[in-house]
Length: 171
Image (cartoon, rainbow, N blue to C red):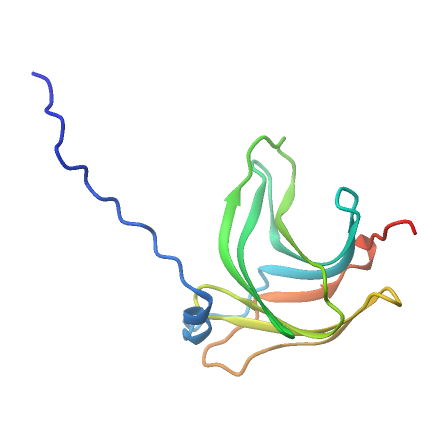
């Protein structure tokens, strides 16, 4: 006996994504400090567009062997403050398996001077760092890294300047 065609297709609920504003106001669960991510700043030159960028690379501490992943993010650039919301991991296609961390690079064209970078997890934990960008002297300084005064906030991200990844175009 054949099945009948359904007249109405069932609605599949969409997964709820937290917005940056709601994650900033969320109080995280009490957990111990555990380093999960690195946030590295460096200057990068794009050979295709021939433009110089200031780049933030978000990278997991854990390395993956079978699949290649990237960190999915939502980025808000508001004057002198950059908010990076960690949304999770996304599997990459057509990659040969190798041992590597999940990594995503975020390029910015116009970073000069002091900036505050906030890395926010969906549960509400926030880690921050202050950077100074000077493209003329080709240096980036990590001024300080800290976690905001917030109930149950914990350390999960280490900030760094990756001078070994600097690249500049020929002029």
